[in-house]
Length: 324
Ligand code: FRU
Image 1 (cartoon, rainbow, N blue to C red):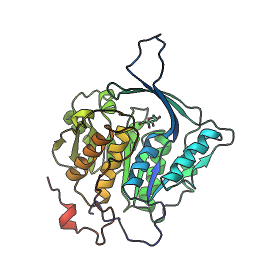
Image 2 (image 1 turned 60 degrees about the vertical axis):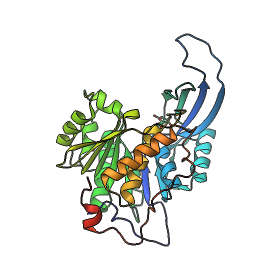
Image 3 (image 1 turned 30 degrees about the vertical axis):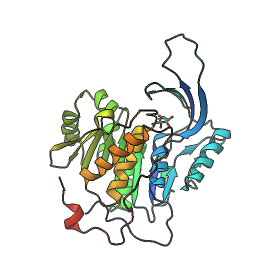
């Protein structure tokens, strides 16, 4: 099946890219340089924004023209209102999110180093994870892609199985960001695995090629991708060789918070647009690199996205075959 073949023109755009994962409050302190332990420094600026991997990716996909829907857990506080307001501004459908009475919004305290754009995150959460029975109530009608964060593996595994059983033509992607107990259960079922360098390192691999070759042994996915920061990304199609896409560096790295989430959005966008995996990974590397040169997860000015909804679905021969 071609990567973009699930696209259909429709008069009701709905939330056709469905993202399942977390939304957080990010309290970001910008500092001139990273403080030493037990130091006391003054922040140059502070902002409180909506964060969380999957909602970050959806905010980028929405800017790229996709109709998006988020399903996850919400607290019952002012931060949850901020999250809903921000997702609303991005036209992301949140109607199926689950609000926990009395629940506190997960919060990340982020130190953003102005000298090099590095971000150090201290994350606190005390909110239940979305479970599979809640996901059972989520509509899969008109969905063209489902993207999961690789968290809460037993429950997420059941959610993936539901999608595979009810809408087997819809591609599923899973983000492998952190090595969590039972995470291997998420490697069977998705069509695309999107791993981070931290995940590869925690799995015992310090080279993208050896990591992907090993990952391919444990997954039924058609495409495995690993992002490698400034070094770009590598990918491997099922039965193919590992390929590398060199990094893209902006003039100055200003803000790397969420760069991996932008990268994931770029891959999904590229594949939904009918691009080959090689082209989609190249788009993702450029998009993530460019946004590291900007503050926040805004798309670069002048970024021209390929039309995500071609009038004619690409044919088997044009987009189904590997272009590299
Ligand atoms: C960035 C991010 C932040 C969030 C944290 C959660 O990738 O999603 O927005 O606070 O990671 O782990």
